[in-house]
Length: 360
Image 1 (cartoon, rainbow, N blue to C red):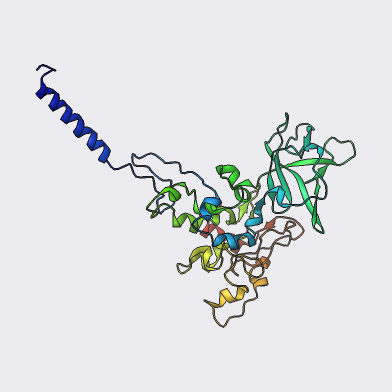
Image 2 (image 1 turned 90 degrees about the vertical axis):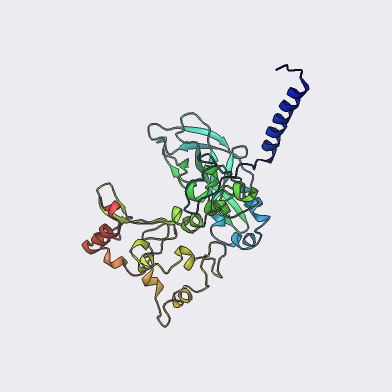
């Protein structure tokens, strides 16, 4: 057929117009959603989708209420900018040694006024980079804050005689707490501290979606507490069981609460968005008031029911959460040593029964 034939040209034009119209009317590919089981989101062609972290300021536009109460919680003080702390004098240069490099004494001059300072952890440790040859890590605790009246003084986070000259050296300590105290360092969020997305997951897809349903996972938020607060027993190098010291839900696995299907996880007793009159993230000012909701008429002695680690020098959130299932006096611990040893055969059998993976 002759390409110049008017009929041929008309047919070709009609085909092209139909194809173009079909392309314009085609619905856009749906944005990936977060499955309710907390798994990684899958896009429309089966690929794992990467959802962006957007920061607290974006969340605040639609959810302003938590931002009035969260700053009063201890989560908020997990990691804050150094600018929040009025210093008694300007930052200067220091000679600082690497505590991680145990092979040979390694030091450098660090100008704190020009260093890349990420922030302050738990109102104490200054976290910054040390880009120096010979230093084993990238990010360290480079200083410690001490408050006097309304000002803060910068001191060494730790002092050791690393170069063996008989004098204490300003020592940079390894920063191992970022996953929980500064999660933004790992996920590249604008908020380095504990933020909305630390518990609810990345919200880029949620913020951009017209239909918000399924764009954030309830299961992710419900179970996120245990990412940082799970405190099951551990095993030392010799294979002995010890009560984990650090995180605050020690031995919860052994409690009847953990075995009950009637509880809404941690949120039954805790409110991560709001502190009570005592600064604790509890749903009532008096913990016994929470107990009374399910255990009316019983007067609990929480100091005995939720024992604190007697060898914890840092004052971490260390109250036992077995609620009487594992009492301190039952552990047969040696109080003269820092680890809380578990030597009682009955308690060890309980661990093996409820935590079979740990018992292997």
